[in-house]
Length: 236
Ligand code: SAM
Image (cartoon, rainbow, N blue to C red; front, top):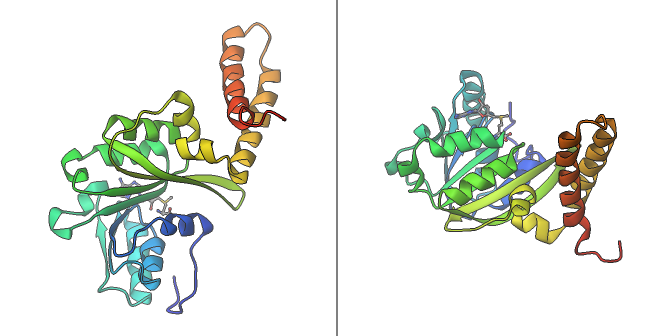
């Protein structure tokens, strides 16, 4: 449970998510679990109202008790609901965050109610995996990526994708690596993909010689990482 003190309990991952929240946004945090993100944003006075949506009873109750302990009951409402069902038009939600879930689950949540989703201006998404699938869905459903960030937190890498209504056309590489992340080539991005490269290269040595198709697919994945990491660095 959170104490009433103004201490920062947010993970680095969620702090990065919070940094993308525009001041004064009316936020719905889907899969809010402990409601850490809305509580942090309220305490920082970045927003003045939030909904925390949770599908599971346990996390819903932990969100309720954290909000009560923070004395923010009049500013955050917790709703036991599946995804977009947590809000209605009268809530005037303009921003939805969905963090800490697989990309496929995030897609399933977003696609469940296109009419409702169309009322929301901005999405802040932090998939734990399946980022390419999520980017593809955004591209095919009238969203454009406005910003991306990759963070390392407790030995894991997380991508944050900010999307707004619009159009974009992403190449296979941009779907896999992220259009902004690939361009920026941050140290964290390089570290993440160098690790993945080492893993795939090691896996390649273990595939029997006769499995030519499997080897080819893996080799293509490896080549793609090398191109992204090193193509803009001719001296490497
Ligand atoms: N968002 C927090 C974070 O990033 O730390 C919590 C992440 S937690 C791993 C995922 C939460 O999403 C769980 O509490 C789970 O019950 C909730 N969840 C999963 N599917 C959901 C859905 N369809 N609607 C609302 N909540 C959902």
